[in-house]
Length: 575
Image 1 (tube, rainbow, N blue to C red):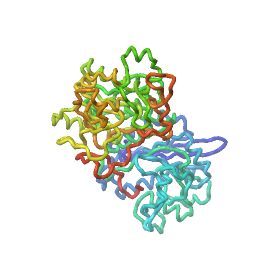
Image 2: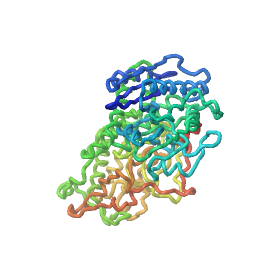
Image 3: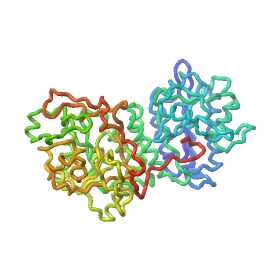
Image 4: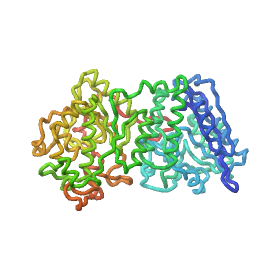
């Protein structure tokens, strides 16, 4: 990750669009300069003019605590860089200048044209993050600090759409240099009347106010992502993990070709940089070594999902084995008979009342094939992932810590949920002594992801579930004796699977029932014994695939150990 890299796109509209590019990088403790130089070699042909301003020394600011600390000298330097870019754009008679921090991901290929079409002097595309944090404020105190207002969240969550006047935009924004009012805008030096804190975004916001230039933020479309700011005491390794998570979040949301191209470039440069001495050396230590294999289940006809997941896994530094899922829609009655598949007597979906679907049979058989491989190949531990998941920050590091703890305490386990929907919400689940962030699993839905031991796979196969099948996420709780339906459980034994769950969870679904982009291959199918009877329960917003509901405080799980990092609270943070 770049410790201090700023990219400034200078655009000029003549008879056609001419792009100029200005990049500055400095005060780096990693290989940012070489990485950016390599990118410029490949990309410079698309620009009308390129200005490259690298500075190898010094590698840090004399008054900084660490690479994520912003002392006055750093603010001063950044303001001068931005002012130099603004001055250069004016001297080249550019019509527009687009400021983009290097860790911002612009995933919408039309973002520049869309911002120009708004016909505003100073406008920012609203960027997303894993929290409510974004690149704008809706309120500001008389001292120039962030002020919480009721206007922010409806804009950030797209409940109100449009372009809105705001007192602050930062990180990525477009400035129309053709407007006379833009001539008085400056990043440095601060306005003579400026008395707020010495902070680059506050200085520029004050300059805009004094020049009579209204800032706007637009959320008519999805434009891109930015990472949540880190705390001053965090390091470059933390920043790298944060940026990787930003990439995986972006991949979870959108299918823009630009984003996938960007991810390909990032992975390419990561490979290049990894070959350089000393660069990203910490990645080796982060390798997830506790599982023999990571299985990724994917339907062949869901190519978009496998593409996204494989790129996501590569960004996380994880290698996976792709498993072709059994397509329930392709199963016919003779195949089911040949496999000896029968529905568990009396089974009905707890919400819709329908019987088993062929989509659910396909899902079960996909997991069953992995359990079989684990036993036949004598694999000791595996991680099983479905293809519609998104990863929490520091996924690999946090899962590795849990698996290390299970080894150190010699925990007797068969299955560990990494992602699930907790269904028993009346009382908390028991935490595991000696293992941080782990609880004894109670009744749960979903098989998004789980670690499985060799013994666990043997137990699941020994239950001989095919002649008495029900959905796989109903079968697992039966096997660890936590299913609320005693009649279902009576068909299986012994029910001694030792099941646990990480807490908090490390993966979640990319989409929930009713959300744009939600697709179910288990609900939208046909019933198991008659392919003429279709099911389409997901369009009725089935509760089973809905997001986890609120868990009462009295039933909240209590564990020791790591938890998702809160959004940093600094002068440039919103929520």
